[in-house]
Length: 212
Image (tube, rainbow, N blue to C red; front, side, top):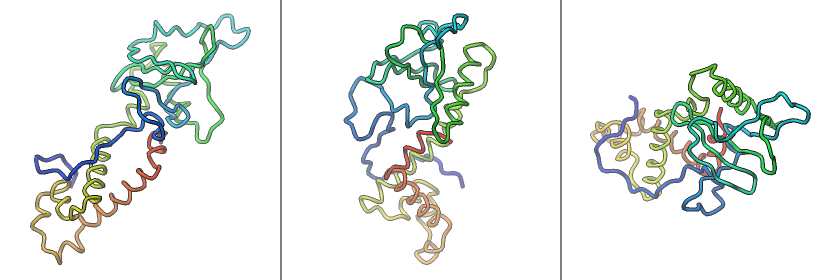
């Protein structure tokens, strides 16, 4: 069965964080700055290359749907669009004119390259396809990650696995006998999810942010 949200008592929650900023630093209350080297969906905007006099500069004021613009030590951080068209940008500092997209030699870099290509096509009016970032961060994926957080919170405070299965998977799990529960598919599924949740907490979220 597909996990669904149900109006049942929830395991105690310890809260959560989407890790858009460095998790080793305290989150500032009003600023939204992320690690562009970790989030490979971030498009890096650089200065106009030398002697490219015919190249059109990138004017921030002309970018459609620019909703966030924050200044950080590594440049300006911006968010363009929302939902299906969302894309994160980092604009290099100390440049009088911006007019290039930077692709660092990183492994793998196909996610950043694909996002940069989508942005150029979007700005040129050549595509109406959803952004690569929006396709990665789907509602079903968010729902699964939410379930993982709730499962881990419950396990940390000692909520029995069968009780959590009745909330997160199927209410009928509460009626499964102890003998049947040991070999049940629901128990095996939740144990796999616990391993996945622990891996994310221990550092796997960096891969999650980086994209496919």
